[in-house]
Amino acid sequence: MKGKRKDLGQANCGIARALQVIGDWWSLLIVRESFGGKQRFGEFQKSLGLAKNILSSRLKKLVDNGIFVIEPDPDSALSHLYVLTPKGEQLHVILIALWQWGEENCFEPGELDIAVVDKPSGLPLAKLRLLAQDGRALGSREFRLAPRQEPGLSARPARR
Image (cartoon, one colour):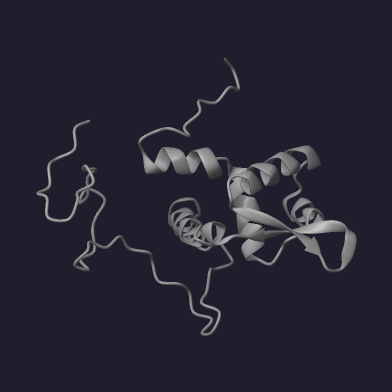
């Protein structure tokens, strides 16, 4: 069926389950805006230019999935705030990874005129790296899926 998405909520894959929660671009852009200080429906709507019905449905899904909580707005009895939960705050790593990938692969040299920087120093963030338990940097082909191991059990290769 056109437009019907598969439910990934029970998939045995961390990526699939994460995409079930935050898999469309509007959801991640809403989270991005919240890291920039936006908390009100109108702020999200104005900054993203998103139709109110779509914004409403994405915010509802993000609240239902524990990314945001709704809190009273101290400045207005008629509105409320969308506040990132600790679960939502953890998305900063994903947003930075996407930013860095996009910066490297989606722009011509000199085209991007803003950078993600460290607040205290103002310096650009270091490139994110995937590290092994012993601290070694891992390349794109230096990891695999494997069954979770209980402490003291030997590792077996994962079947695909």
